Length: 103
Image (cartoon, rainbow, N blue to C red; front, side, top):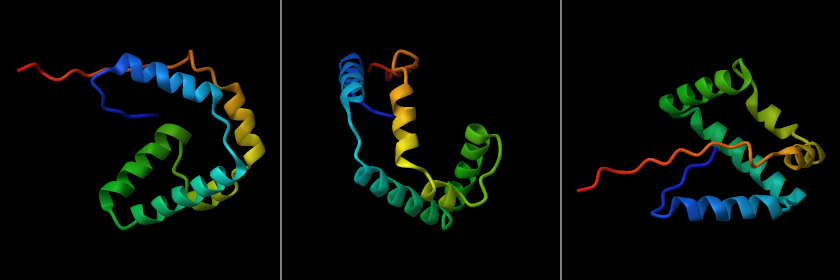
């Protein structure tokens, strides 16, 4: 899921697709992302709205509430993530463009 705001959505989509087709992620980047993600999960526990949102996302994405999400994130393997990345089909995507009311 990606959210963006731009006056030129088609150009942005084209550039993002080019980027994702050629992007190579390193193990160091994955480990950094995992630490940031875990930190975000911990910080969310201080905010009721963020916790509710996290629980709803768990149900939508996993069909259940992940009790120990930090451990789940920590156990993600770099090699498995690379295999998933290689199987991504960018053609299988949906784009929603919302235009503001013109004044």
